[in-house]
Length: 178
Image (cartoon, rainbow, N blue to C red; front, side, top):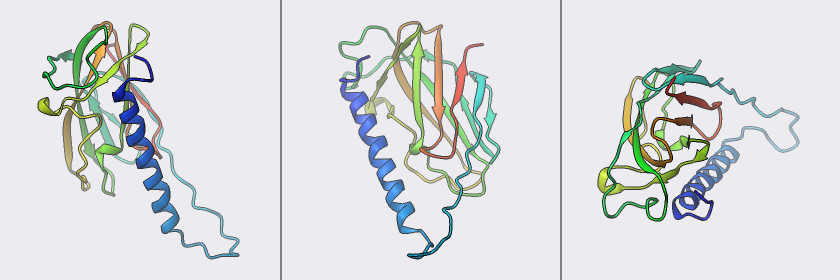
């Protein structure tokens, strides 16, 4: 996939807008006063790791993520990100359990896929309930979300999914076949 595809640009724009909103919100909630010598609050970053498809990974704050094995996917006629891209469409099911003490919004996650050494093209297919990220609903502590993401890959047997649950605070989590 080249960086000029519409889906990559759309995801980049979504991530950029979300990052700008996060920065704006952080600036609006600052408690430091002008001339204060208070240091900025330290942001906790939770360590990621590597696991296999269909195995759950729990971050230290309690957020649990699992990605199912890639399966064949037939995009609808209105799907974006498929036309002109060589490869085979697959989808993965993402499960998130909010075991943290705060709300979590799944549409803040970022997912990239590599297959046979090449970046996979992400598919947007609202007719098949396939978006570019998780749902925009807020998950309260204890809530669960499951949703599908789809990609065009070179080799469905050689897929690596890298997931970052949020713009800030989490290191990447890598899912592989074995």
